[in-house]
Length: 251
Image 1 (cartoon, one colour):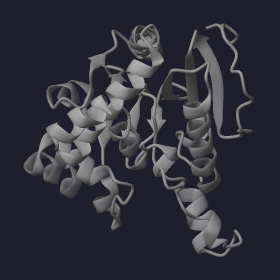
Image 2: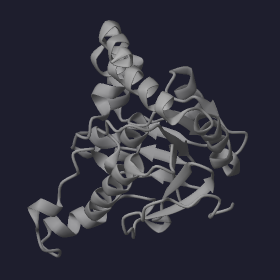
Image 3: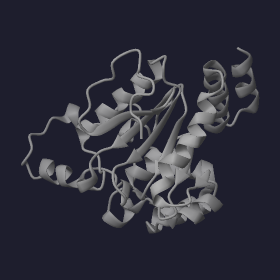
Image 4: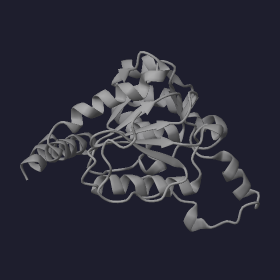
């Protein structure tokens, strides 16, 4: 995959937990680059990713982002529980200010407003915060082997990054309750049936390729049209006001 088709006009923020590449004009691919840790995200990673997506919104040479996970097994397994355990055991110095998600949420995405569209290319399991990232994206392309779930209740904790209310908005209270209270994951096919997924890639290895097809379609339209249209869609989805969404476009 090419990495230098179109370079940004401004330098990206420094990264150590994600890999940034540019597979097509106006498109950035953000890869959670922690395969050995199932692409779980440490606290520093949330801040880093929030900075990346803030920069993406400002960068004039970028119009669409794709987020995926390194490797074949995991999109994102959620919070780095090994790091969290060390913090609680006192093995890592506690710094409360650094143990918070940015305002844009888990991975800088679960509560993001933003301006530009982001596509999740779910290459494996998306659990806990990983699923909350998916729910915060505008579109989702899944591997046929992908799974989605909120297992927090099984661990005696709860999903607090905005996932449950977004899940209710997407699939309704009964089905969202079943997922969140049983912790049972669902397959890519079931997720598509529930309108949580736009497309299922032909294979695990083509999920980014399929997401890129969608990204290229969006990148080809007017960037202003994409931003305004997305804002209207988000307004209607977040607040349920068709009239307010219509007025937003007019303004």
